[in-house]
Amino acid sequence: MIEGSQLRDAFISAAHNIENQKQAVDALNVFPVPDGDTGTNMSMTITAAARELGTLEDNITVAQASQTAASALLRGARGNSGVILSLLFRGFSKGLAGKHSADGTDIADALAKGVEAAYKAVMKPTEGTILTVARFAAERAKVVCKKDNDPIYVWKEIIDAAKDALDKTPEMLPVLKKAGVVDAGGKGLLVIFEGMMSVFQDGTIIESTAADQKKIAVSWDEGSRDAAAEYEGEDITFTYCTEFIVVKKEDAEDALKLRAFLESIGDSAVVVDDDEIIKCHVHTDNPGNAMQEGLKFGYLINMKIDNMREQFEKKKQGKQKKEQAAEYVPVDPDREYGFVAVAAGEGLQNIFKELGADNIVSGGQTMNPSTEDILSAIHATPAKTVFVLPNNKNIIMAAEQAIKLADRKVYVLQTRTVPQGMTAMLNFDPDADANHNQMTMTDAFEQVATGSVTFAARDSDFDGHDIKKGEILALENGKLAFVGNDLMKATVKLTRSMLKKDTAFVSVYYGSDVTEDQAAAVEEALRAKMPEDVEMTMLCGGQPVYYFLIAVE
Image 1 (cartoon, rainbow, N blue to C red):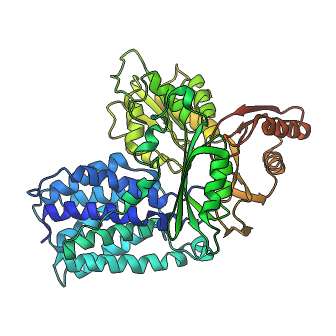
Image 2: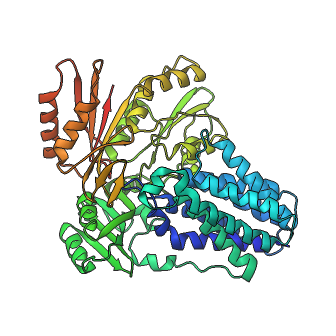
Image 3: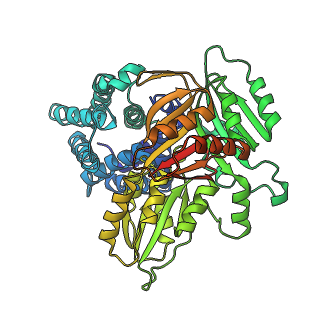
């Protein structure tokens, strides 16, 4: 039988295991844009559970352990992979409800409930993903528990089935087969299962190697929350606290050269060279240049950029007790509607505020906020009904999990890009009811085409394109349109290709790595080729990673 304390330790062991291997999981992401966050999101999600489980005594039941884990996973869920993980273990918890300990049949039934919950939550389940790996494992468990009810035996079979399913994912998703990788989410789930098995079989909690990562001055989970904490405002010489990890290529040069470059463009440079990775941290005004240099040594994962001046100002004004943790505000009975928007970049955040957003959750492609981050912003919005704009397809599911946790009515609009979120707000009618507004805003933002210009984080053969790291990637509505080497030419070409006969407005937002002179040059080139009846605006978005975001309406 598995006791409550064993299940508690198993979750903690799983959190350590995925934390130790998250970089390898991140590296499995197929699309070469600089996100690569599947392993990171899963790690941060289950780590939220491990923190709470670590406070429980030994005399707990499996029901209590699983319920504690499920609750923390739900609130800490980040990205689609993290949300699906939380749903799996929420169903798992329901299967163990009321039980003091668990045998093989209990484990099999609980995992089956978890898989059912996860499939129901995904609108269009795709096979060849984490869902498939979980389903294969649950189906094997249901069969083998009838032969041998020993939970350790059943869990071993769960792992074997998960491995079999993971190996088959390239046959189910051609994009995986072409890239020569297995599904990242499925791999992450297997790593978690293996971490749990260490406790079930050997009574051993896998140790975390995360302490090694604290050599970097600012970490994802702690220092990054306030990269400006050690400074007075006048002492901040460089604006952006920039972190990333380079997974080294075989013939990578000495990391001392990367350190020298980072020191030449900023201060507080820290470069930790391990066998397979180089962990980098620097304060600079040009985070894109730092990352571009890093690409010479390998491909990038775990990228994080913070505006330290903005952090300092928030702290000075008493607004930043904890990142993403806005103060709770009761519902104002006279306030009908409010808005929460997710955005990264001071310019974009300010635009949302000007449009009427009550609270902004800092986040985006490389920084997926958790369900709890979004929930905190909702609870800081004193309205009876709050509309949430995720503005990224990988944040929608986390936002939707906040609906059932909130103490006020919440509508999550399915905005997949920042321009879609802005258009939604522009079409809000304060005199209409919530359902009408939801439909009207959705109809409006679905008419918006979004272009984005970024760089390739690694070499890739994707969708018929032979991509080399560092090349310019032009994306239309999230799909790769073409690859180039000239930023201005790529931006102009992408924008022109998106124009339709009925296009009336084009808005271009330039990012933190684009100078005002570069933006002006792109604007001049665009205006020279833009039809006279199309109104165009160029604005500073300040967003990281993406040189330009383009909205065509």
